[in-house]
Image 1 (cartoon, rainbow, N blue to C red):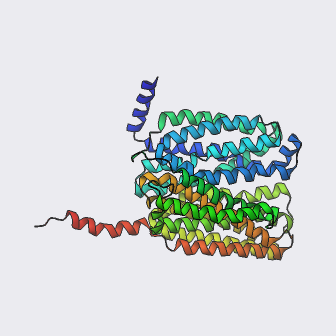
Image 2 (image 1 turned 180 degrees about the vertical axis):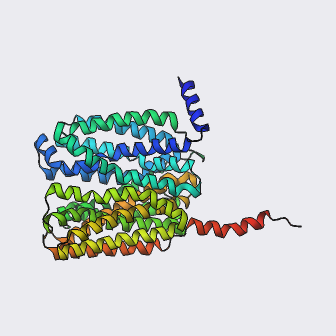
Image 3 (image 1 turned 90 degrees about the vertical axis):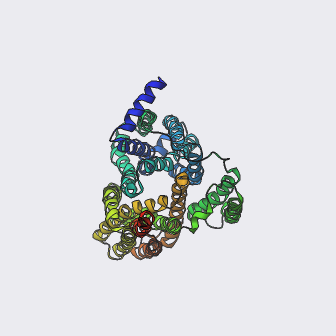
Length: 477
């Protein structure tokens, strides 16, 4: 049996379309772990009624997995770099598939929250590993194109879940959604076993346990502080404890990583301009995007006066334009360079927040639609360029941890953006309150534009390298 599998894999690897097979397999895996997220948010009321609890309790179905998976991402990314991207991808996906089956069998709120958290933490292994597997088979000059498709699936998965999951839940309930996820996961496991080849180009070293513990303490406390502050109140004892633990953990992480022989995140990468600029840009983009993501539905309902169903349909404009523009943004980056592309995308994100503010002040649906489209297209244009700049700035052996740390910083920015914009909004249904919050979101967007200005395009780097290469191979007479 193993010989048959090896023969099939060898045929695929030698075929002309092997890159596409890897891309499709990796992206299908990522889709299977992300598509239920949006529909869960919309369906909390139905699930709460089925399990005999409240929506407030079930809000942890969203927040607990988000917090846990954000902290786990760098650790899982480093595991892929050390022990093999294919191995971690398949093991993570197998675990997530089992967890999806357990989620479908949840019997009370605690079991549902626990199984969803387990599914997303284990499933988080598919995000950095899928990116590393895709990058491994594409040359540097073509990575931005592949990452455009990666962004399309990342954005489109939740949209498909919303479109398909809503009628499905109305028809047969919420549990079959996770049975579908498990079936899809099983198919991906078969494809991954056949198609993917291992990525491991370095000597094995000991896993950085101390760095992982420090990061979990520091980043975990920071995420809880930022995400729960508006709900619990900033004076809550648990949040005050997090405010103390977060800097302790992050300082500990810095000291451990400086001394570690094989650090969880090599800090010297922060001296590389594209690495740091891309990370900072993702941080501020996360704040602007997710702040608008949370407030724009409330704006549409309470200021513009649309129903919940109408609001859900209007909100689809954002992920749809995001997913459709990602491949186009990747092609554009190959023509004009990653820096220009990132500047255009982040400027559109900033303009989106201003458009939402004008919508609130003028009770105008047109400004809301413009804001949703600008947010979606801006993300689609900027994200592939920034991801390509980030991954091209690190050694091949560290692609997994680089992409995972970028995702974690984006999550931290998102939590901070939601907390700040929600605090500025203050629960008021008045237009000026929404306008103030979105103008603050525009400040986050402006910082992302500033960070994007420091990105160096690969086109420029290659152009600068050509004369040196010519000197090296020129005949000496």
